[in-house]
Length: 214
Image 1 (tube, rainbow, N blue to C red):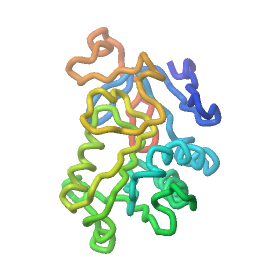
Image 2 (tube, rainbow, N blue to C red):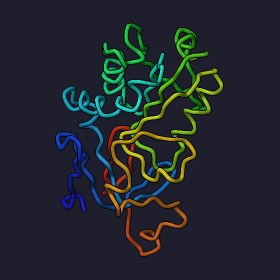
Image 3 (tube, rainbow, N blue to C red):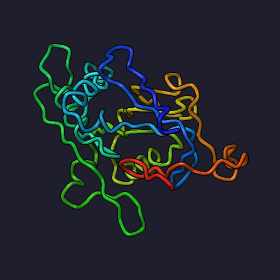
């Protein structure tokens, strides 16, 4: 299945593209029929800057932001996003200010926390949450719970990919959704049709890629 990959381009900017690998994959929480390779969007400086330009658009004129909280390796995009939001312009609400870019840590119980030296960037601050991919929503809601605990005010949520926007009560600004990848599906392991049909797992999806199962 790995040789059947294809690319989906962002309509407004074809240079921004997402590689989709069909197969039978598992994460810690669900099975899926596709692996979405978002690494190029997060690691290429040129592409990350273009991604940031697109993600900044909904916030430029009316969303005051103090801090961008980055999840799942989106720090490069987050830095460019902050730069875009601080652009000078008559209508730009965040000009002539500084915007911080931070990432939470995990404690021994795998709960998200902010260290003492970064908590002041969250408490009573206007926060834009930036995540790589939203499928089951576990990462998203874990981050939202963490920010709520520290008293951060969520003024925006952005994602490179959001599988099922209609399933979430929050408005999420996304580059790609299931509309771009109509065959994308996730399943609980006990209800996975590929497992029931006897198909073995192809790979395990991890934080920054996947591990093939031989």
